[in-house]
Amino acid sequence: MPADNTNDPNENNVESLEERSARMEAEADALYDAQQEYNAQQDPLAPTEIPEEEDSSVEALQDELAKAKDQMMRALAEAENARKRAQKDREDASRFAISGFARDLLDVADNLRRALDSVPEDLLAVDDRIKGVLDGIEATERTLLRSFEKNNIQKLEPVDQPFDPNFHEVMFESPVPGKVAGTVIQVIETGYTLNGRLLRPARVGVAKDDGSGGSATPEAGGDLDIEA
Image 1: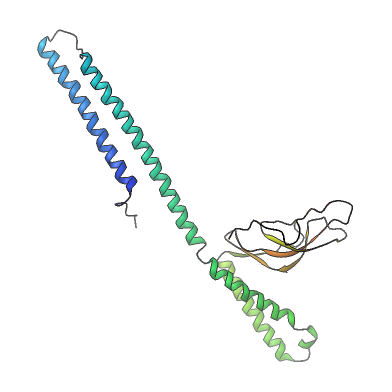
Image 2 (image 1 turned 30 degrees about the vertical axis):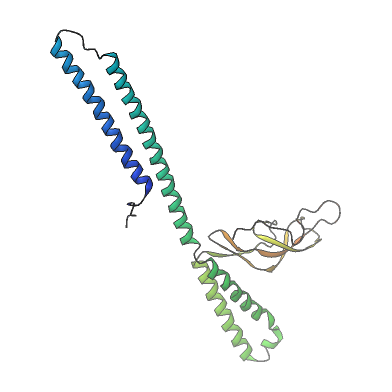
């Protein structure tokens, strides 16, 4: 459905400039034609000339017409920029409208995973009922994660990747043989993004320098530039 622009001040401004340009162009043409007709009546063989005062009037109208056209083009450009900004705002509102709801669901995903990790494996062989409960929890977690994927909610899995302050939050640093300083070695809390925008940073542990050089990671608990 096309947008209603009846109340758009830019639209009204553009229309008035168009009318003004047309009026001034018509006046200039009429003045020129009248002078041509007058000269023809006085002496058909005389060269067509416009008196100096008439010529200055035509030039003034032409200058005003050029200014009006310039103002019209500027107004059109401003209206187009405003339209593009409004379109981008609508698209962003549509893509990230579920941000708050998605953040609430992250706690559900966390609790399901905690429930699965809290049951010792030796209990599974003792009581089949425990295994049945765990199977149900796992099925619930899979369903929730599929819903995340359908709505472009992606899990961050940064283990063995370089630390990224835009998506990760350092919880601790530890020297690990064979690991480059700044490499993520453990995920303490899973992070998620929505359409590429951070919902929650992954809280991680990173490898630090073994003492032969400076640390390549920020201080734990340091400020992050995280987009809400």
